[in-house]
Amino acid sequence: MVYEFLEYFGVSKRVIEAMNKIDRKLFVPYEFEESAYLDTPLPIGYGQTISAPHMVGLMCEYLDLKEGDKVLEVGTGSGYNAAVMSILVGKEGKIYSVEIVEQLYQRAKTILTNLSIENVELFLSDGKLGLKEYAPYDKITVTCYARVIPPALIEQLKDGGSLLIPVGDEYVQVLRRIKKKGDKLVEESLGNVRFVPMV
Image 1 (cartoon, rainbow, N blue to C red):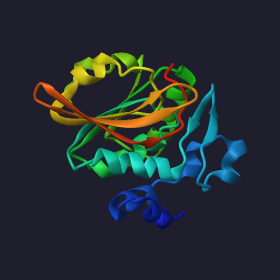
Image 2 (image 1 turned 180 degrees about the vertical axis):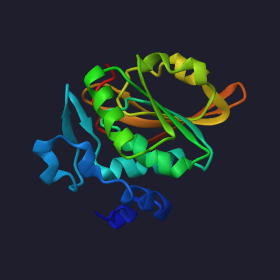
Image 3 (image 1 turned 90 degrees about the vertical axis):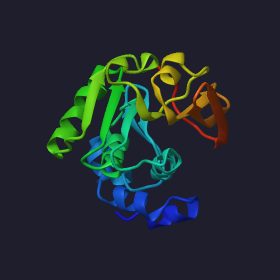
Image 4 (image 1 turned 30 degrees about the vertical axis):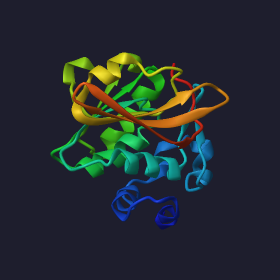
């Protein structure tokens, strides 16, 4: 599968190349394999979804992931997003991903192990609390919407780092990017999105 069409969404060639290296079909349930390459979210069970490819690409683009970045992901889900990010941060980088649904955590762990992806570490935990033991993070990305931004995520963001999170309710959600600059937070709205709620 090639994702060159994502250039129309403003996704860079670097992100597209990373996405082309990860087979989305491996991360969707068997009954949805025929739809794996469509640009649409798909159910993965337990009320959760795998995001549409264009949204994965855009979120990676908005995060501006660099080689060597230490990233916290809240909401592992299928593990697909973490796999794509693992390529963008390179061998010197690290993805710490938190999932609260045990069945999804176990499934993602198996898939990532089978793919020999070594720079992603998964945790079964409540993402609202972040992952304090490995903080601070260069980038934090949240793959579910929150009504308010969890304070722990701001606290665990490195000075100069970026947090990407959908904020809103079941009707309206806005993707927000928060950059920490010393004692100040610089917030930016990146458009309306549609995500499942933070559990």
